[in-house]
Length: 192
Image (tube, rainbow, N blue to C red; front, side, top):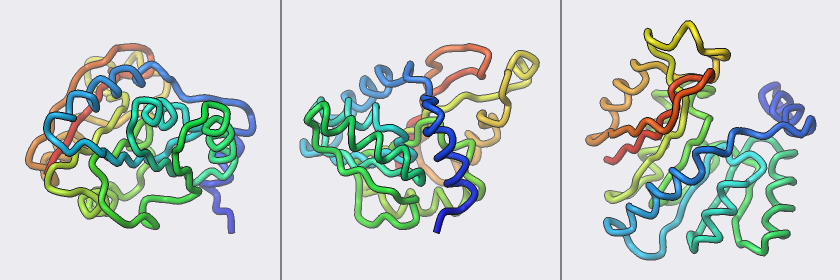
């Protein structure tokens, strides 16, 4: 049964829209830097993978990747890209609460702002992590300094959201990627 949220995202992907791909290189750089801390056979969960661009790039770099999205339209596109690029990403129409197992890296690119109950979401994320896992969020942030220029505040998280992450994780660090009219784009890395 398709819910309203799934319908909205299906329409988004049926219209050919794509999310900003700028942060893919920076995310890959951050993930590559974690290799020293975790085992070689790194399994990544890409939450809200959309049409699969980042998941496929990660697979091309030798990572084992599972990409999930609630949009079946997005997953059809992701599977087509996976086949075209001859990668081995496991793409699933799913939400985070249907996923089991442990992952070395969990990605949440341009999704965190859309999570309705962040507390429950973060508890589930922690259940999917092992002692050496990283949870990486790529998102625009709205601040007092940039709020007047941000075009779409609904796609941003707040500084308070970052403070709330510190209640769930022992280490939270962030890197400013760029600044534009969609907010100050950060990549936030969290560990247990």
